[in-house]
Structure formats: C-alpha cells, structure tokens
Image (cartoon, rainbow, N blue to C red; front, top):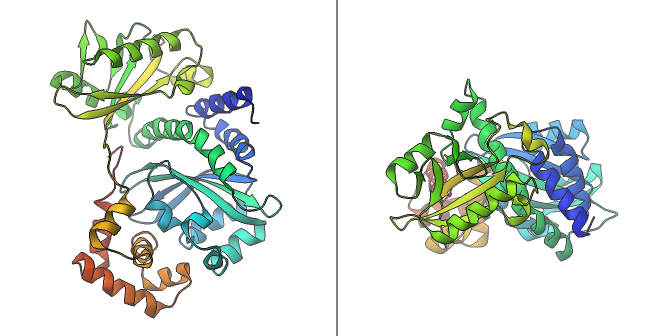
Length: 377
C-alpha cells in the first residue's frame, strides 16, 4: 500500500466517498492499512453540549461503537488535548499525555484494552466552536505503539481526508435542515461556485453571489469565474481544464489556491473535481466540472493551545484542566478522565479563574470558544 499507484488509488477512494457515503468504510479500511492500524473511526463532536456521533467506523465491533458514543467518549482522556490542537495536526496518544496516565483511566481499561488496542493516532479534520470532525486510528498490541513512520504516513493523506470531509460535511450539515439542494448550498457560509471547463459559472450560492457583488475577491466577467491575481487565475484555469478531461488530478494537485482580494484580505479556494468516479453523481447541472469553495484565511496565527497558554501563562496541567472543563464536563468528570483527585482539579481550577479573570466554568467555555478558528459558521 506504499507504492505511488496504491497511494493514488487510496486518495481517489477518499474523494469518491464525498458523495457516496457507503465508500467511507472502505476508504477508512484502506487508510488504516496504509498507516499500519487495525481500526479507524470518523467522529463528530459538539464541544458545547458534548454530543458525539461516530459517523463511520471500521474494525470496531458495533457494541463498542455504541459504548463509545454513549459513555466513553466523555471519558476519553485524549479528547481535550486533541481539541486544542490545530486542524490537520497528527498526534498519537503519547503526544497528548503520558502513557502511564492513559493506562490508569477507565477509558483504557474498559474500552481500549478489551478490544486489544494499545495506542491511537488522531487528527482533527474540521473544527468550529460547535462542530469538530475527528479522525482516529487504533493500533493493536501486535503492531505495537505508534512511531514516526506511522505519523508520517497519516500526514500524507490528511490533506485529502480534510478536503473530503470539509466538502462533504458542508453539504451534509445544511442538507439536513434544507428542503432543496439549492437551499443547502445557500446555507454554506463559504462562497461556493460550480463551474464548467471554461470557468463559466453554472451556479453560485448566496455567499458566492455576495462575493461577486462586492467585487472584493472574485469577479464574474461574462459569467466567468476569475481572480484579480493573474497567477491564481492561471491556476484555476488549469484545474478546471484538467477536471474536464476527467484525469482526476485535482486531488493530487492539492486542490487549494491562495487568493488575495482587492481589499488585501487573504482567502483560500478549495477546488473539487465533479467528474471523477462517484463525484459524477453530484446531482447538479451536468455542465459543472468543478466546485470551488472560497473562504477567508487566517494566516500565521498560533494554535489555540499556544495562544491561551502564552497569554494567560498557564502550566501544562492547568491547560489540561481547562480543556477538560470545556470538553468533558464538571470537576468530578475531569478528575476521572485525568486520573487525579477532585481536590487537585479544584486547585487548578481556582488558579485558572485567577489567571483568566473568570469566576465560572461557563466563562472558561466562552474563553476557549473565542480562540477557535471556524472554517464554517
């Protein structure tokens, strides 16, 4: 599974799973093989109400999937530290907490260990204050602990997994609340343009129409999608032409271009081919060969973890307690997850209140939410 041909095939299946959800299981299976894991899961979380849903899972018995969703997701000690990491960061369990701390938790004893898993490799694929899409691979005792080679393999495919989840979830989340496909697209905060091979705009959602009307980023000249920047315009033209030839090059090109608006603001355009494999079944005008998602970029910002710790001068333990309060729950739950006493959590909580100028746990939740960098509202 390490040859260029196999990697290309895996990337193709990842993108095909956007519109054919049944293919996610096979994509997870092959991704797990690629990174040397025995199980994998795509998980959605709501950090505010702490709701969890296992979107897709491979190699995990259904009973354990349900147990995780209902009970052990809240007891997973890696959740808090992982949610404070940047989107796309790859981390093993030992990158998030000491292995000695992990094995003391009921999550390890009652959920991981009975299934024969000894380590996990994770990455956040999409994040906002109210939605997190999380990728997790589990490794059995026979394969041993996660090593650097395993991390590097996951880093190779994370950009493609992210893009597939971003586009798929953008549509899925709004479709559940909309009566028509057009309404769903209008519910996406990112500007969305469906274009043909000649860059003619087949459809633009409400955000996209606003961008065209404001003229700060993109302009439709003769109904063509164009960029003010010549280099970007050429890159878009090449991608659209490639998609029309059905070569499936968008996934391998990266499918992302940096844009600068007339106002000097920075944006990112994510381009998805609509002509390869299952993506032909998108259900929109047959002329469309690509979907272009445009959103404002936040450049050179520190991670939330770095920003919060630096600004308030938090110790690593205080940061873990803060994460636990925000993402796990009250003091007793945090103590259980971290494997420390309730009194110790309370001590760190008092220090957090003093350092951040807050006096309620709800204020800490608002504080952390303010440091999130959502791609989609």
